[in-house]
Image (cartoon, rainbow over all chains, first blue to last red; front, side):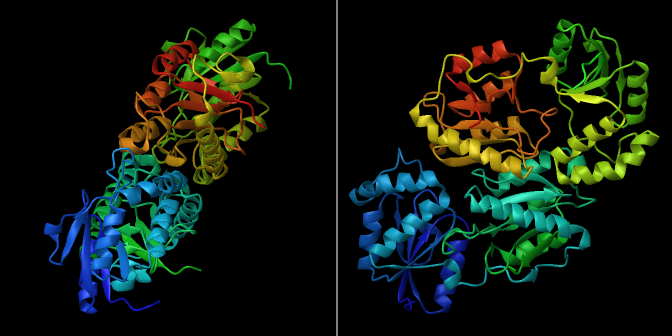
Length: 280
Length: 280
């Protein structure tokens, strides 16, 4: 991989783009921020950049080249756009059939397609974790609580179920409690999945007194790990707590923990374990 | 299979137990109703019977034998009990370790275990559909709307995804729209899954004007088909309509349509197809 000189950061919502910028500055890399309209605003950033619509592929290419960016990083939350109402420049319009075809196959296919279009134009695509390791989860537990023997079976089943879901590009997450799959994430996302676990009858889940069950989020086996790594943050912990879960497991080095110190404090407060496991 | 003389109907909630009673009376079979406390009441039935708690296995056996019931049918909605707070008679208590072990493996294992315990006592277990064919879905469409060519890919993917979920005893249902798995059912049930599809952004689902996407419910491949057959009813159609779906697919002869005429009317009103497909 060639060393980056200047990176274009395609920035969606959330704190990850900011962590990438910090990381880049620490490495003396210049950053041009392309804030995605509807998800991020230039006023949130100190770095130079501009705002772009999702359908402005040609304009992005042109500006990134003019800015002498050699590498691109995509970071932050961008939800699937409404392709019908998207304003598209000509280049994007020519890509639309390909985009729609990829979108119908699932999130992976869509992201891989976008990555390959940028690569065709001579850009190198970097992962956020190439620029900034801070938000990656390490092996071991984050915080004061560790899984015990009684959590092992749920951890294994949750990891396996998440793998199965990922292999079929259905989603990254699931919740398993006492051997029973309580919920599986598809397009609604992890937060909504956890909210519904909290609505299940108490007899099949844990509660604040007796924590039971495990959330697993996992990179899909075929997934491009330069975009859309599984992510947890303070809200994940709060919702896991409300759902009565005992813990959260993600693969070490393959998931982001945003606002790590806050996550640690909340996990300890609710007596929830957060485990980065080594792939075996 | 020996011919039933008198059947014990273990009745949960909903209309299915009533359809079973009608079917039994048409066949001149006597019925003793065991209404499950919390799910059904004797005052809802004209037939003789009694009310039983879920933990009164021994009492049920004794009464069914005294009533000279030879066959047992389980019909209607019974949710997973809270094993901790269940009042158990001695016989049930001795079964508890086995029940808990089966329950942790999933719904199938739990139901198979209950069936086998009744069989050990000399009872024959019948399916509701052995007594009453009326609520079973036939091959073909129910109502005025049929799937068109554009629905085929979603129908296939929804059937396959439901099969995958069933094979892992996760759940019976899923929703697929334009190739994308929008939602997968686990412990929350079909209604809640449809409600959340209605909450997804409109750009990835259909609406009342442009119906898109398919709900599939499917018997799990290893599933005991004498209990817990996939079921749809008027509420399923209403919620599918709100979720913007184009149709519902279930396996012909392997799913119940409760209140069939009402379902047909609602499906036609919302321009939704209801398809019973032949297994191939």
